[in-house]
Length: 332
Ligand SMILES: Nc1nc2c(ncn2[C@@H]2O[C@H](COP(=O)(O)OP(=O)(O)O)[C@@H](O)[C@H]2O)c(=O)[nH]1
Ligand SMILES: [Mg+2]
Ligand SMILES: [Zn+2]
Image (tube, rainbow, N blue to C red; front, top):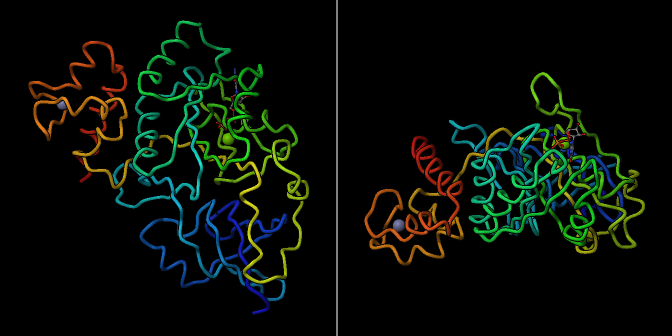
């Protein structure tokens, strides 16, 4: 081994990894023993991971994954027990939704928000494609998530509305951007950072769904929002020859993780009895329920159902809760 240093995973394809250290991006592979160690999740090394890398001539090998500060995980498919970690070491997460071309379901958004609550990642909602919506539909959507305590950023990747607000929101942090395929994730990231080479897909008219142009989760350093360290990163460069003290520069930049669109978002590691805890607006009132183990489905003296009746908890969010309770109960 010529040297060992620390780098950040910018992209993971399963067979090779793009790593970043000291302003340079380079490709590495995974040591066999690591592949086995991670066999319980479908991916042992994920975007956002900080890894130790061995340099051997012009080859780079990931030798170890540093402990994760946090991560966001989903069930690989609805029926599977396998889990898929989407990204690690996040400051915050964004779920991008659209109500036309395609329509994101409330349940999808809420599954993502529940996962973020459960795994300790602050989440915000972006309603994109507001150029396609009448004002009353926009305000209804804002109301649903406002009651739950979430910030909603209204945006249009094509008209530019909300792009400035989004840029401010992203600046200096590492953000996971998730959402259905075609809602405009790549377009928005590109609008925030026009210099970035990010591919977006046109919506196919036949299905109203976006094409799969983002195949792997990819972390970008947004040049236009970043500090002085960022300019060389778009070109692959030689990694540092120094030792373990060659720290990744994560603290100083704006990092955004663009993800391939997912159809569903299976919960993992969340028991039905604790689900309501991850709906902040339900957690806030559930102390008033008559039973300490109230499931908020049929019990008398249920403070959550009463709040739904009074319009203090959005019907849409409560319906999502019931669906998750029922769906995920089946897979246990
Ligand atoms: N009308 C409208 N179309 C948009 C908007 N943002 C993105 N699109 C279009 O939606 C399609 C999918 O966008 P893309 O960014 O690839 O979606 P992704 O799959 O979420 O990354 C493209 O044809 C975009 O031009 C928007 O705000 N309004
Ligand atoms: Mg995309
Ligand atoms: Zn209750």
